[in-house]
Image (cartoon, rainbow, N blue to C red; front, side, top):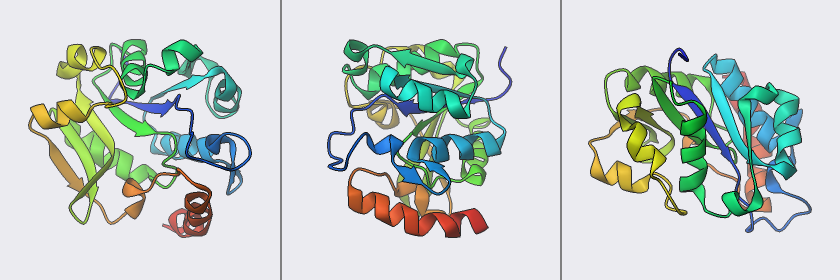
Length: 200
């Protein structure tokens, strides 16, 4: 049995809003890439993880984490949306004590945030990080939510579960819980913000 909650890094989206050259998760950020930086912060937290991605990104993920911790979806599977991607991660770590869902395009979520959400999950079935009262990521689910998570489909992800079940926000001063990279402007902003995060 896997000890503690597992972080599911969701990295199977097409990133279609990004107009730069190549996939947004492969863009340079700090000393790594967007994906590599996100994974590096999860590794710093010490929490177990699973990366759910595509063949195009699987090699980059495997540069940072062990191949056994990478689930590669086919194009048809990935096209089914974030709900299916989350379900694949949950199924791959079905014996976990819970799951933290973290989109791979959120490289400014620091290790302390992940640990705070994981700690709260021991007392609540659904937990999310928030900044100044605004809900962000990661969003976490207890082991009792296993069947519900496996039934997720489409691009809605886990939104309907947050609406259906009582959930608790873990307030953080880290604005990175609200920040994802969709555009080149977002990437530039992340490059400016990352040094401050690394000093914390």
